[in-house]
Amino acid sequence: MKKDYLIPEDLYYTKEHTWVKVEENLAVVGITDYGQDQLGTIVYVELPQKGDFVDAGDKVISVESLKATVEIFSPLTGKITDINEELNDEPDLINSEPYTSGWLYELELKDPSEIEDLLTAEDYKTYLEELDEENIDDDDED
Image (tube, rainbow, N blue to C red; front, side, top):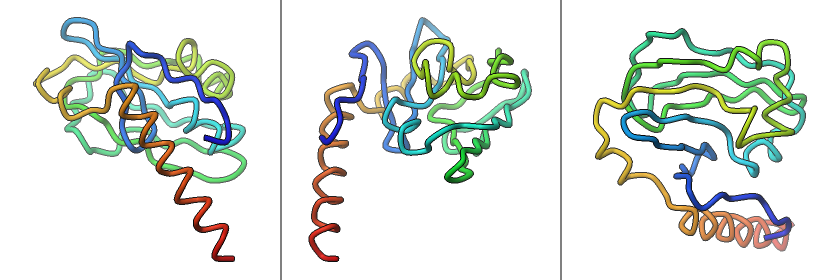
């Protein structure tokens, strides 16, 4: 990889660059270090409502950066029990602290077995290396 991105071992990941921290029946979701780096400076986050029920794959959040606006999809099914309201005033916490203060929302899991569909830290690192190789190949074609 061109850069050494922070990929904590105790989290799960998606190919859409979100991370998931699971504790018993709760999951906290955020954007990975790689994901926030690709977005650039984040200027606005449209958060979901507490109490909303989401299915894995549902659009949950809209994130606006100086580069683009992207949709964040829920990696798991469940009820949103908490949202990071600090992001309303400080959306760039996602850039500066993606794995701590920059978390997005917390979910009460409907089906904990869905976690098996997520990537481990090692799987995610391998995925990023593959993306990096594809980008190098794309650069060669120019």
